Image (cartoon, rainbow, N blue to C red; front, side, top):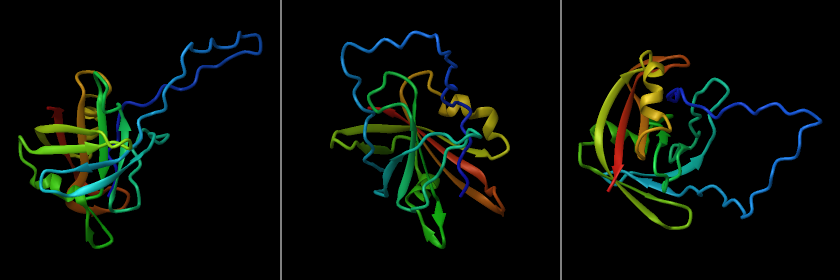
Length: 178
């Protein structure tokens, strides 16, 4: 299944010159990025989260393992921005945990456990089906790092069109912190 394209990416590195002063070191160590754990969907389907950066074309890579979901974007404790989790609806004849997104309902519980064992609880507030051709225009609104914190779950589905597109639609489920 093809990954949804996300219009928001990390900014390119700034150029530096040989005469540039070294960057100031922070007075306190910067904590490491929050480590991934698992996401559990309302009917109990669970996927292991794997942190990934956007590819050069702005597309979120999807792990090859059916039981995994890519995590990109905001930390779970962020005040704003989307924590985006994307996984397969199916793969090589087997149904994936994110197939459940097609039957999800408003108010359903989404539970994330981070790598340290802390539990984060969310409630589904929006269900969207977006044609792949329309997704790039909506990517910043759906997957962007502005606005209130939320979890955005994404998978493929609809009619199979093959090739690099896979399915013609994406199912997007947005959940807000409880």
